[in-house]
Amino acid sequence: MKKYLIILLLLAVAGAGVGFYLYNKPHKNMERADADMAIKAPALFTAFEEDETAANEKYLDKVVQVEGTVKEVSKDENGNLSLTLESGSDMFGVICQFDELTKHGKTDFKTGDKVTLKGICTGKLMDVVLVRCVQV
Image (cartoon, rainbow, N blue to C red):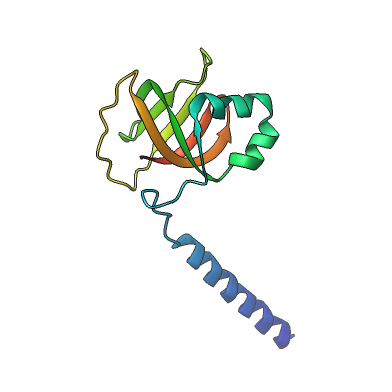
């Protein structure tokens, strides 16, 4: 019985160690991160519209550099900047949520501005979403 108790205790300590490591793991520096691929915003949106499963395999959780025209600029309740890029659809677009861990040189974007951003693709809800974006 003591043997099982010791093994259980060792497993709990190992699990706590792994959890502590993962919790304190540093975030990827998006300014220095190399883009896995570069694409224009309408092409990215179309890829998800035509075949979401294939697009998820190709873009999901990858650093994607996207080029496009600003359709809408917004800030959330914490003041975090989000840009919606033109996608060719009247209703939906490519949302780029700026990285709150990075100091951004430009934050005064206007509708119609041409931008190149890179961020981590999290897939498509109604819009294609990139998080932790920085300007290239």
